[in-house]
Length: 273
Ligand SMILES: NC(=O)c1ccc[n+]([C@@H]2O[C@H](COP(=O)([O-])OP(=O)(O)OC[C@H]3O[C@@H](n4cnc5c(N)ncnc54)[C@H](O)[C@@H]3O)[C@@H](O)[C@H]2O)c1
Image 1 (cartoon, rainbow, N blue to C red):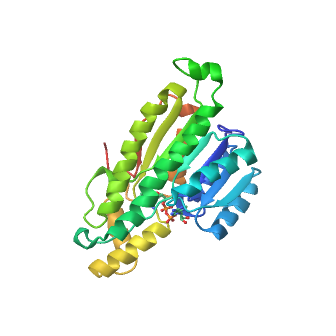
Image 2: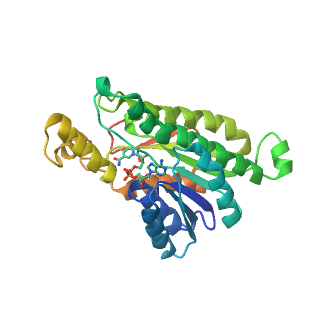
C-alpha cells in the first residue's frame, strides 16, 4: 500500500474494535505508528498486537475519554513515547436508542460526555501539542507553509437531521460538525487540518446494540432494524469498516492538505449535504 503517512504518529481513540480499529490498521498500513486510546484494556492490547504485525509501533493506552482529566496525561505519555503527535482520530463514541420523552439526565450525560465533551478536550489537548511542534519562526509568522497536523472527528449522519429515538446522540454528533468548523478556523494559521467524517450504517458492535434496543422498542427481530436501514441506502449495502477507514486515511494524507472544516458523508448516498 502507498505509504502516504510514513513515520507519522497517530492517536486513534476507540481503536479497540469497530471503525476505530479499521482506521488504526489502515493508517498503520500506510506507514503510521499508532496509539490505541481505548476504554477496554483487552481490546486495546489486541489491536496493538494486530498493528505490530503490519510492522509499525503501537501503544495500547487504556483511557476513559469521558473523564477529561485523563486526556492531558495521555498526550504527555504519547509525546514521551513517540516524541510527537501528527494525527488525531477522534473516533470513540457511544450510542443509545431511547424515545425522546424517556431520556434522563444520566442518559444525556453518558452519550454527550464521550461523543462531544471528550472529543473536544482530546482535540484541544492534541492541538496544543501540534502547535508546540510548529517551529517558533513559523508560529510567529502569519501562515504556516504546509500542514502541521491532521485531526479527523467522527460525526454521524445522525448529526445531519433529527433522530427522535437518539436525540442526545444526534445532538452530540451535530456538535461534532460544529466543533470541526470552529477548530478548523482556530487552527488554520498553523496549517492544522480539521475535518470530520459522517458514517452512515456499518456493521459494528454499536449497530448490534442499536438493533437490540430497537427490537425492545418496536418488537423487531434481531437483524431486522439493521436490514430495514440498509434498504434505505441508495448504494443498497452497509458500509464496510474499511470504507470508512479509506475516507479517514485520505483526510490524514497530503492528498487532503487543502481541505479543512469539512464533514464528509461516508454513507452510500443517504445524505447529500
Ligand atoms: N457503526 C456505525 O454505523 C456508525 C455510524 C455513524 C457513526 N458512527 C460513529 O463511529 C464511531 C465508531 O463507532 P463503532 O461503530 O466502531 O462503535 P463501537 O461501539 O463498535 O466501538 C467504539 C469503541 O470506542 C470505545 N469507547 C467508547 N467510549 C469510550 C470512552 N469514553 N473512552 C475510550 N474509548 C471509548 C469502545 O470501547 C469501543 O472500542 C463512533 O463515534 C460512532 O458514533 C458509527
